[in-house]
Length: 255
Image (cartoon, rainbow, N blue to C red; front, side, top):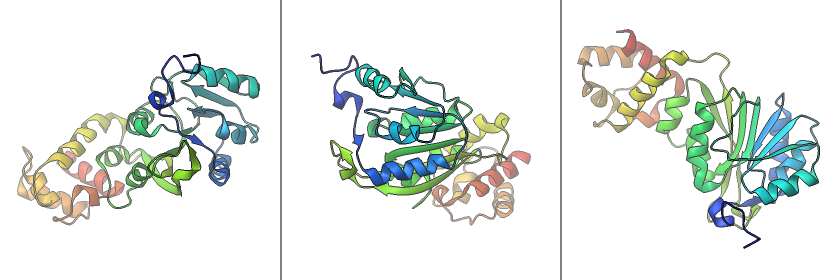
C-alpha cells in the first residue's frame, strides 16, 4: 500500500494528469497576462507548475497527495509546495490556476466563487462545465448567481488524450475574472442568489409566468421589470445575460 496516498489511490483523488504541451503552454500564456503571486491547486506531478515557474513569479502550490507534494517540493525548491485540500485552502492570491479533478469541479468552483480575494482564475475543467459556465448554449444557475461579480470566458477545448490516464470526456479552459465594478453590491448577494434560484426552479413557460407565480409579484410589476431589463416575457432563465439578471433584480427589488 506504499504507492497510495493517505487519501487513497488515483481514482479516489480523481487524478488525470495533463501531458499535452500545447495546452500547458496555452495556460502558461494566459497566466502570463496576469499580475501578482500565483496559487496553483492540484499540481499533481507538476506539469503546469514547471511552466508557471518560468514566469519568475511567486507560486504557492497546494497538493492533496502528500507523496507528490514531497516530490514536487524536491523538484522545484523555488516553489512553495504545501500539502493541503483545495476545498479548504484560502484563495487569497491574485491569480488561481488549476487542473481541477473532474468529479470535484462543481464543489471547487463553488468554493472559489465564494471565498478569497483573487482577481483571476484560470481553470482546466470538464468541457461541458467550462462551456456551461461561459454561457454557451444557455446559462446555468451558478453562473447567473455569480455573474454580477464575475465574468466567465471559455478559452479553449482540451482533448481527452491530453490527459493520463485518459478520461472519457474532453476538458475545457475556463477563465474567470472578478469584476472591477460589480453589477450589484456584495450586501445584496445572498438575497440575489436566492432570487435567481427561485426563478430557475420556478414553474412557467417563460420568465414572465415564472415571476408572476412568485409572492408579491403583480403582473404590472413583472411587466415593468422585464421592460426595464430588456427581457422578452417568453425568455427562459438560461437566456438571460449578466446585465439582464442584474437589471431585473434591481428593478423588482427597487419596487
